[in-house]
Length: 166
Image 1 (cartoon, rainbow, N blue to C red):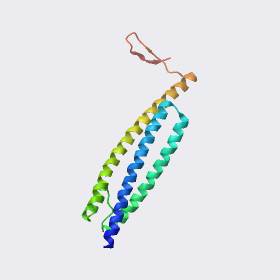
Image 2 (cartoon, rainbow, N blue to C red; image 1 turned 60 degrees about the vertical axis):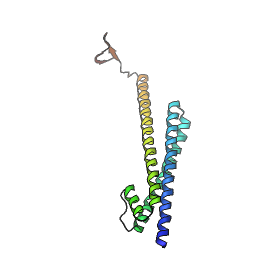
Image 3 (tube, helix red, strand yellow; image 1 turned 180 degrees about the horizontal axis):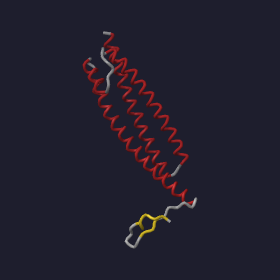
């Protein structure tokens, strides 16, 4: 009987942990969007603060991940099985031990989490693309100041003149 109560408590903790994952990843997405806006505005001070906030959020998510690993290990021992290799295995173990409600809730939260992570990745790609363009522009500007300009001339047809540089 006490094993059932302990299993229920652990599965509730896991459900809460997944909820925290969703909240923190949402925060990370918002910070990543803020980062892009500060990049566009060239607001370096705000960008610095945003990057620090992003690092704190990522550190918190890493702590949640450690907690998830520990809790998963504990649940695996309670379920008399091997450590689940993925969420699906974990959910199956919970369902097989009459924790269907918790498993269903975690499954839904996991779908939300995957969606948020995908959005974060897309936004990070936008941010990286913008940064790469900015760095390229800065390098070109730096070269022009140093007199190392790389100029191409074009023929009357608009084609590069054999790639000659002057």
